[in-house]
Length: 561
Image (cartoon, rainbow, N blue to C red; front, top):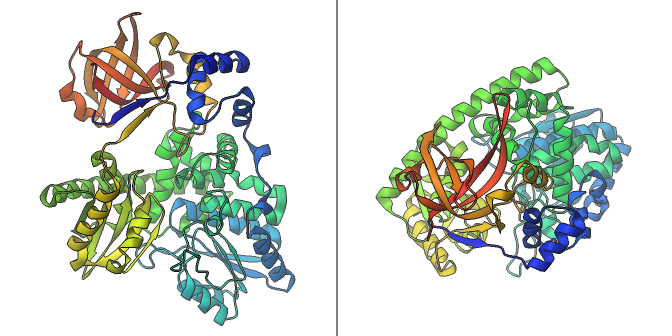
């Protein structure tokens, strides 16, 4: 209710032109100019994105050198390679891609190392080198990490190992902004060069797999799509092509792990979308690395055994429920701590014994609720370690860079980062970060971007079908959001676990539609029967008990002026 609503209103001429020339509804035509699509040709290109839209893998800088180094290692007699991944879904899926691709390249023994969040922490870890030597590897390949792993890369070279680093995170830089590079036989990281696509770790792994084995790599599109959607990279260009083609592949249940997870999540009979993955498969695959050792998840993604996949999917479902319980507990404690400490420019909360695996999710929820960059820390002894999430107006990675003298270490992206500092520095760090945020963010007010205004007469099953053509939705390609003014609230009530349900009626045409606001029960106190409101929503088809009902998924409500 406190966000600024901004409605896109393209000119009538371009809307009429797009609608007529492309054969789409005026409602869909009103959405497209705000997304940079202003011609039928551009719309056709956007909608036809898929496997045929994938770019030449050698167009990604460093891929050619990496593929050459790998093939030369195999040609020189090296039969064993070790893949070093990461404990989140992007790292797990990219490891699975590279393990499969390297086997197809001719390596007879491909091992993998997934660092433990609690024992190793993030990054290229020296324990990987010990494992590589123990299995007789001649080559170590990193995926989704390694670009700042200077010491481990140096150790690997000292031990006679070849090193290929593939990553997508920000490199360390010198005082002039030039990237500082670890010692390696080849490096692939789009962040090293201008003009490169903003790929996920799985996106980089997939492009390298393409360079190694050609079209055989297309069998990994489902894994690449999972990592791409999980890592919140912009769903445009190459990322959109990967995500869309991968979603189509997942819909066919070609990989036993995907089919088993869909069954465990209760969505086996439903169409997959970017949104459904973010609420079903992705949290379950991430849960293991948040609470325990993520290594078994790689075997799960690679297994061809349906029974084994089903058993492990059920276990992931159990672990995810445990994760949800722990997350809620820490979230409530963090809010209580925040009530005690207060907040100004930034939220920084710390607690003893908070589970380190869910700190990022809690930070994300605090950012969403209070619209501030949020840092959530777990204190262990004299150190505090945690995760941060930010708002669009503030680059949290750059903020940490400016405060690096206060930190033991940090890393991440513009909107998400991890950090470590002395426990005694938390208050000083909170003040300093708040100062930076206040200097850069003039107003702490979120913006609700509404694609178009709409009449209930245009909200129908055909519109929902048209909107589905814009899938997959996610970061950089959000679900279309419509706005309608002067709606009458009918029978508002709380359902399920904190959801707000009602009917909304448009008086001018007497049309009435079901509406639900997930996690919006807190607004119930502002609503009553016959209240007139403006609503921001996405129309969907709710499939329930064998039926299909048109429903509005609410994203915002406010009293009508």
